[in-house]
Each structure stands twice: as structure tokens, then as C-alpha cells.
Image: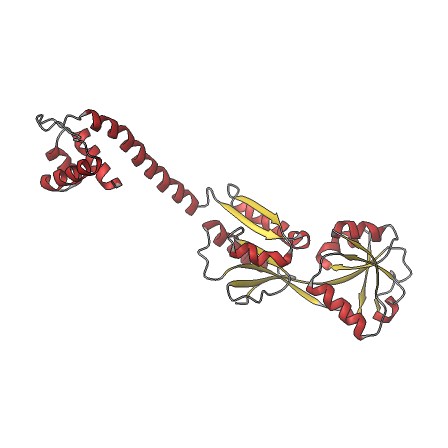
Length: 305
């Protein structure tokens, strides 16, 4: 039983005969009769009283008529829903990101929501090390990472240029300095994020290579907690610049350049290679590209693979 058979059956029932149904469907009467007969064979019941020329339905035909109308109505509803998705009247965008990369997403998602207010956006918190896994398991359509995934199944687009900021309390003796060397940090007590990352490894390697002690006396689970700890004179920290820009501007924290720790970090939108992106997903990339052209500066849009 398929929808075309049901459509033909309904045409006969509504037109009151096979010949009128054939004209409506632009088919021959024998073709219409054959389709209905095949449907009757599949069901195992006669659908029309063949003794009547008016296409009178049998009891089985009356039962099927109700279901056939529902199924064909659902087909039209499905077509309409897909059309609405195509025009972004509905849809869902799912992005896997960690606490830090969410900060990049906020202005971009604000612009996306402004353009497509009826598309639902879900940002699910995820460790950077798990993002690729979530993409490949289809748990998320996009992810945001600070490193380029070493996986041929994933594509990446660089969308933001960030760096590492050395932050300290505003009244710290080093706070008024424009630039310092890494050797001046040997006696400082660092507050660190307790999640391993390529940036953390790079910082540790640099301190070791320069033979400077790195005292990570406190490790905390969130960037917000680290900033609060530093602001209350409990230590200093190395954090993504995007995370502290507003705090520095408002005077809650101070930031000083460290010559040996000028690491550029790129944020990347990542997604499955050869993925059939949703309409909302394609619109999201278009917004990211136009947003980069509009904002410039740290915002970029450079496909990498």
C-alpha cells in the first residue's frame, strides 16, 4: 500500500466512479481500476460495491477512506513542515562548546537569533576533548574548538583570533607595567584551570624551557571562578583574552603583556566532513561569515579543511 494507491482510491470514492476519477487524475479508466484492484488484493477486501455504478464504498472501503485522508493530510503537513524548514521558519541548531568558547558564540548567536528568531538554538556544554566525538555521533551539528582537529572526518573554519592574557589584581606591583618578561613570574602564585588543554601544555612547556618556576598552587573548575579568585588578590592567572576583556575594561582585573607568552589562539567552528547540513546549519555559517566581514578585527572566516 502506497500513498499513490490511496490517492487513487480516494479520487474514485469522492468522484463517485472510476471514469470520473480517471479524468481527475489524468489517467485511463483501466489504469485506475487496476490500481484499486491491486490495493484490494493487498488489503484482502473489496473496497467498492461493483454492482453499483456510483462507486459506493463497502464497509472496508469506508474504514480505509478515513485513514487514507489522514495519511494524505499528513503528507501535506510533512511537505509544509519541510518547506518551513527551508525558509527557516522552524528548525534547530545544536552546538557543542565549553565555557570559554561560549563567549565567542554569544554575539554571533545574538545576530543569528535576530535574523532567524524562530530557529531554536541549543548550546550544549562539552569538554573540548569530547567535541569531535559528539559531532561524529550526531549529538551536535557544530562544535567550537581552539585547536584544529586531527581527524579527516571533521572540517574546521577559523572564526576568531584570540591570545593568552596574563591577568592580575589591579593593585598588584606588576599591574602598572606595560610589558614584563617571564622570569618575573617565577615567584607568583598562579590560579589555573583544572582541565587539560593545548594552551595549558604550551604554557607549562614555555616555563620549563625558560627554566622559570611555575607555581600552580590553586586549580579551579571554571574561568569565572579563576577571575574572581584573582580579583580578590589570591593569585595571578593566564586566561584567554576574550574571557577577560570586559573585566579589564571595567577595572576589576589588570592585564600585562608577557613577552614569552604571546600565543595566538584561533577559535574554530567544526562540523562533520561531507555533512548534509541542515538549513539552520547553513544559515549559521553564512551568519558567521558575514559577521566576520562586518566586525573584522579578531573575527575572521577562514576554512581550513
